[in-house]
Image 1 (cartoon, rainbow, N blue to C red):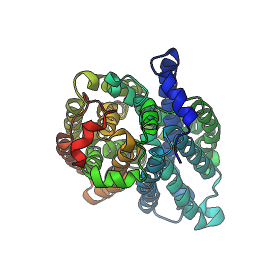
Image 2 (cartoon, helix red, strand yellow):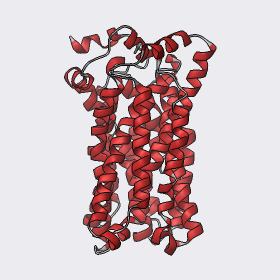
Image 3 (cartoon, rainbow, N blue to C red):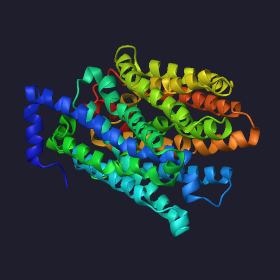
Length: 451
């Protein structure tokens, strides 16, 4: 099963024409809108896990136990992400980027909408958290398959001298999804009030998913397959078992791609999930205080992600990325110092600036990872490398942060955790080849790996 010949012909004929330029714009828009919707749905759970789910799904547990249980289900979604990367990576490298991305969008929208109608533990008992686990797994599978395809959709259509910038457009989906999800949660909480919000109004943001998915599907159906994948099909270079080929010939790149995300993904989920609960439960700030701060932080990141993606095309991806890791190693101590200062405006400033080091990573990251794999294996390879980090970095981060705070009684233990992640990232990034100036449409670029 491969891309149909008519699609290959249309893509090939579009090259160098006005239609090609229109497709580049459509691909960028489709990747941004699609990933925004995917991450909106995915981050809704993280916000709800910190602020609402302990009471809804674990009412019999203590505050500490309920928080751990809620974050544990959050981790389950991360465990499912490499599975999604493998499954959809296989089909993305077999039948194309476009068709696969339509399926991931549908899967995410349906599972998120179902969370919005799922009864709590007071109504159906243990079945409630059980079904929540299942739906979280489906969310993880969907987002696991989404990232690689959305990045390639933009990067493989765009100007190859600007791959850092083009790859950063779908990365905006994280900031935009976080912004949109936090905005809807904030407005809902403000209008409904704390009591009504906790009693059921929290479901509204999840139910809105179905509307956003319809918009995303309309946009994605308008685009053609990428020229690079169409060339693979035309030249009969489609791999029969792309994931197996990735694991045999490019396992090193997969491992390094996962490890270089340590100082990006782990602190991100500390800032956007754990800190919500920490500031409300441990420091006594209101939900709106942390939600508005997170809203501003995601807005700042919307500007910074493409900025650093562009800089990676001129200064170099590895240089930008390693600088970001070094900054993150120091920032963890400054960040928690401000949060724990007891001065409201300093704490609010820290929340607002909390994602700046993350944006420094995230702008060049997509191109840095995707350039490590040849076109015929790029969906599966880049997706696996990116999503495996979920198991060691992002997934356990809120759990580990909660444990460290409970065990040591100081948030600086979490700062040390962030510093260790920065050291790991620096080592992994130094070991990964820099192909920012290479022709990634030429399999000869990767030939030495197979020899």
